[in-house]
Length: 183
Image (cartoon, rainbow, N blue to C red; front, side, top):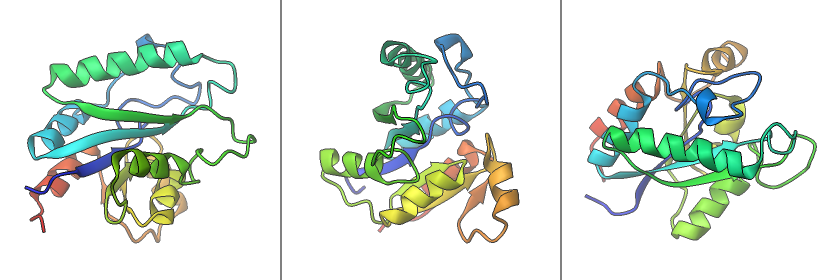
């Protein structure tokens, strides 16, 4: 099995239920059915899972970095309870008007991951529920995958000609990815 096999996941709408009011506390972070098991499946098949997420609620003053750390601790604990592990979490704390390099659809978070882990992004699966997730993946030569959870159905409705794999949810995507023969 090749080393350094990674899959990059958006958080809200892919791993957990999304909210137009933002996920502002650990209590509001609720996993999507099968998503925690999907992460465990990735791990069992030799993939390292990394979360790459925009968190503009910080810039908007809805929560702070300490609260985000508590939300992520809950996510890590629940993933661990299912036998999985998230290797790393990259987040953009900026708002849409901050003109940073890390807010998806810009690829800064993906590039930071690649630099820190000394890997090429070429062909790495990036699973998201919004067009900006897919655009960030395409910008760095990664392989974008859309799930229909979260904003995924709306993304598909607004972009019916997407020429990428689309799955009902993260578990279906994980089943597909882990069942493919590896090079």
